[in-house]
Length: 149
Image (cartoon, rainbow, N blue to C red; front, side):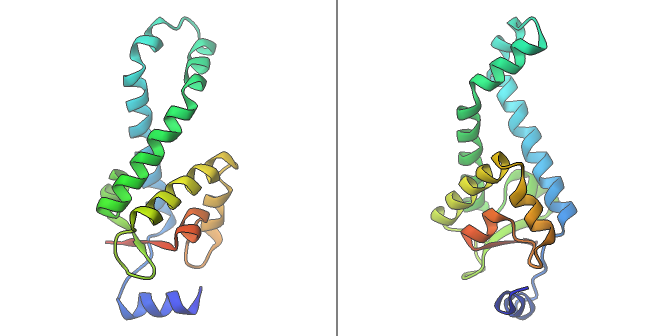
């Protein structure tokens, strides 16, 4: 782990969130957003006759779904330091420099690179599993850490 990060964590008595908590928060957020997508498109899903039609319908709204995810991640991370999934798991995102909730620029950066990581087969998430500071690609680009509350 970066010595600077290690010193900050030790000095402020902050502990990094473990991978299981982060994965659980991710799952909660993804389920919540997926349910919202289905509710928003319920009329269209109800008329779909086959699974193929449902998949095609979902694929039609990929851009909108990504936009919703970016807005959701940015707003909650900036405003509360955590998405609903992170709040449930008692973890939060902090900027390394300030130890506060990320600014709108950092939160937006984090949300966009999170989507990019998802599109690249979740490699950025995998990176975080092996990083000593547990920083995913989106944490590294936004200069954030995910810590226990």
